[in-house]
Length: 108
Image (cartoon, rainbow, N blue to C red; front, side, top):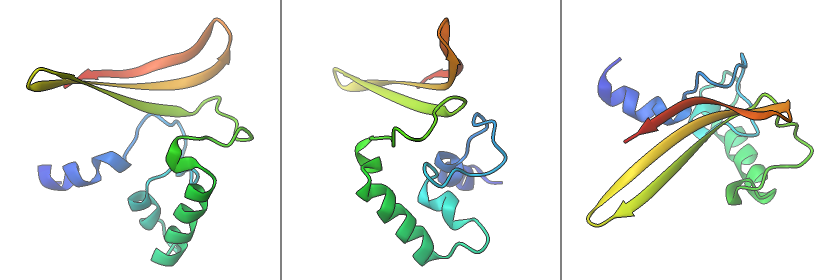
């Protein structure tokens, strides 16, 4: 794999979900398009359905259990003429004493 190819596919990759399969409710369009039997029209329909339900606005369906799911969070702090970026990946738990686990933390 070339560095250029990795940069293109990296946003659709994760090693943090702990799941064998993609979750179509959260997977990016590029990852969905790679699934066998899921054509361009089906991906577009699925994305349109998610957007209609508010997923694009960051609204997660309250009926979807979040325990065990991993989420990536990116914070960009503009400072003078540059910017500081922090990225964290957390997995939600059902433990009141530790509601999430930090799986990754990066400063860019």
